[in-house]
Length: 494
Ligand code: AMP
Ligand code: MG
Image (cartoon, rainbow, N blue to C red; front, side, top):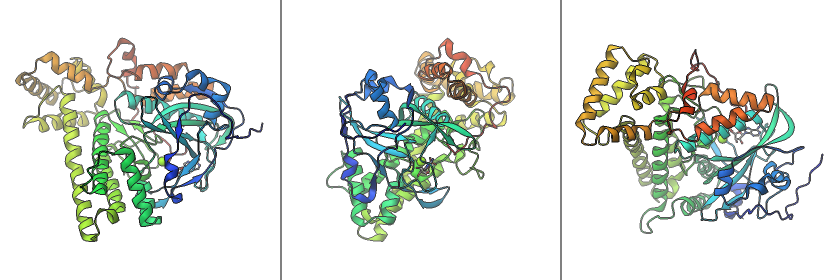
């Protein structure tokens, strides 16, 4: 079946698109329409997200709405483009760009706010290199589940508006059903976008990207300061906040290349990511991360390394004098560790029901982590057991170290002014009872992709939508599989 894109067709799902990215110099993008697909079928729509974007759910579900979500028609006001960027992938610098994505435009929400609407898996682009420009259904549904879980865990993230089956098979290791996903982001500007400008753009290109980013993300810059230093500092703050949140819930991104790090501080690119079960800083899921570069415990260091790449790209803007510029960049980067550490510490204190930091608290936290590591305790469930006052549920129970630690912690709780019930309330609000466990995610994907049964995924999404609820229906989702999923492997070829 041949479908023709006609950008003049006016459709009404209250799309309210702007295209501010196209005001940047042409080096930053290429005009690119999505490639039409054979037989679009909407498999999942994020209705609450649609509503918050000012989009009409029924319209999106209509034939025309689905044609838009599949890339067969353009919504009114769209100027479709693919974005150029570069990136350090596993430490090596390379030219990249949207190889399988098209930015339809920026949806302006009724209550204000600008959100990129991007189709992923929408066909080849000038940046596709050897790729087919397409995406498989399983990985797109996986991104839907995990990004929704992250959002519910109050972690900044891009989100998924919809997944549409294309009716076309694609070839990976095996033949798989193809899909197009609609990704919603505060923006898709990456550390790699700045690296691209610094490497291949003019000074003016770099300056315009920095100005655009400031205006879009950090508009409250002081006029008498150094705006570009401010930009760097704000991105560092965003990332120090984000990475601490990842660590606190045991999220392993898996592919923290600089093209997968946003300047907005949203988590982006759910390829080989997964949540850690057993506490181990060396946890790696990605099959291609053979040296553990992106292991759980390395994430803060890698974030700092990536931010140093951003700082380096921005140096020409920081000061006329190169030495001064480098000094400013280094000072900004050296702040990351302190910012990260204090965010993480605050989060850890809350996980233990502590309102204010005392001298001995860092040791208290580290001791617990060490005991968990030694006894292969489940990260999420250990904190959950402490929260619901059932220490006997953890594998640590009965060990001498844990008995001692528990007593120490109880004494520490007694010492603080805030009453116990408030402390446990704080813990309930800080320790998720459910996370998207790998075996549960796989089970949901298998039912959806193999059998076309989306009920398992919907139930999982329902439970993950309120990770701090501690409701009865969540209980079965807290169980870990028999042989734990520590050997769980994730793959990049999505
Ligand atoms: P990722 O590993 O998803 O961050 O992707 C790295 C780069 O490869 C980005 O430039 C992607 O656009 C590109 N890419 C990934 N998959 C494909 C594909 N199937 N076809 C074309 N480009 C792709
Ligand atoms: Mg990427």
